[in-house]
Length: 345
Image 1 (cartoon, rainbow, N blue to C red):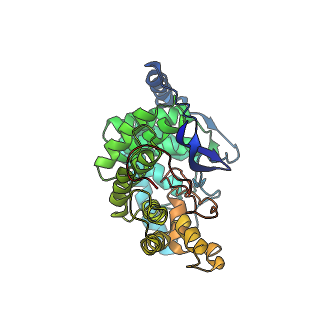
Image 2: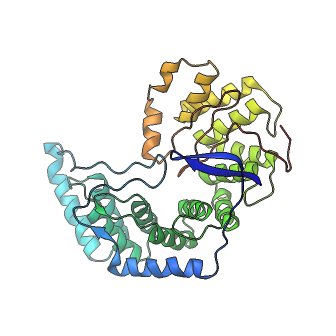
């Protein structure tokens, strides 16, 4: 028994539970690599005419259906010229151009009709040419799926691995996420922590938050509340909403720090101002905001959804509200850790 994480209702919680970590053998990386080779060779799973697939992770929004809005009349000629130039470069195997063309299809820019299938086609071409950013974007697309593109977590995991090995920092974090959860590859928490650490050392805030949660939970490392605080503090310097919320929870509960309600409220307010929904819930629970604030979506909160921010978990009576763990960050629960190093509650 130990402190771990579990998921219910699309939300991750930190709690006391059995650690059922599975360690992969060497084939664990060979199989995704083989799948990636097949994908880049043209075997990308496409489903023409298929409906939108369910999202894989909490808070990850499927791209909206439909085409691009009509551009202003004065831009049509400029868009046509840019499309022609970009398409010519893409057809000449310019990896950056292929990636930009895929992005245009993803977002419906340059007067193009939004098409996930065409975006996947050009991302695959750019990924085949070795473009790490295209490998990352294609992996994200395959995790979510959508109209014309089937979900393929195993291929996505292999693409994250390929891009991470090239030094692409967001891919390091997402590879860690896939390993930690066992999505598309065998679960290996210690290997996940290695990739989180590589990304965190590059200053990537979501990876720093992930390491903070692992230190708090004693998952993949010895439990250490002070280290958890330090990782959250590093990410908070970059105004990461989950880090700010989690610092607030530590101060409210007295985990790794002296209990301080005033500091907790300050960090919850900063989290709320940076669009973190758990920060808002905590402020409402503490009576610092009216209940109506839960129904109001600030521009920052609306923007955070586009960046795969997870949803907040409901508050628990007598403790800090749970922060959900998802694609862009992880949170602290109200259940105090048991045993291990660091300052005890």
